[in-house]
Image 1: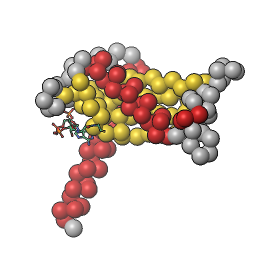
Image 2: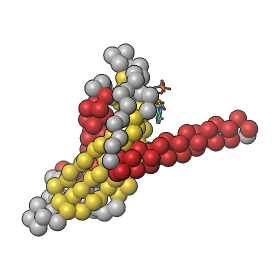
Image 3: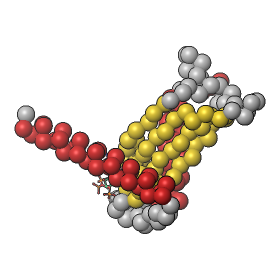
Image 4: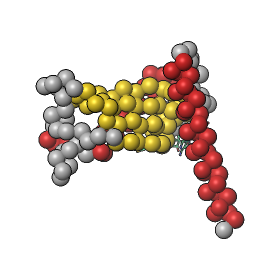
Length: 147
Ligand SMILES: CC(C)(COP(=O)(O)OP(=O)(O)OC[C@H]1O[C@@H](n2cnc3c(N)ncnc32)[C@H](O)[C@@H]1OP(=O)(O)O)[C@@H](O)C(=O)NCCC(=O)NCCS
């Protein structure tokens, strides 16, 4: 991370990290679907520690779950001090990416092959986040129509 990424406190802008997560998630989703994808939502983004100028940032993205046309991609961000080798987990993000055709219409994605216990856990947790999101949307809609 260079000086151009700094905020007024001298750390890296959260928006810079979000953009990197979005790009990493997009690549993971394209590799799974072999289609163009768009970001439908950033469902969650946590910042556990600040990232300092001079640190090397690594974003690891993986598809946690695939539904009809959408996928949840989880991104883990680690910051490394290149002089000491110390690595810290600084952020986690969950994004919903949707595969689209040439007309920009959602298109079906292949199912995700889930094999290990870790992959099964990630898929289960992604299902929970999706369900919570859909429930929240329903409750908000119901609240608006009844009010
Ligand atoms: C994402 C987009 C393609 C969805 O189009 P749509 O007409 O709502 O399509 P659908 O209702 O058929 O939904 C398609 C999928 O997107 C998911 N989706 C739509 N809106 C969503 C949202 N706000 N959050 C999470 N998922 C969403 C649906 O759950 C569905 O998933 P599924 O097929 O796996 O069940 C459309 O809203 C779009 O193009 N948005 C702009 C994306 C963009 O420009 N991103 C960059 C922002 S700078």
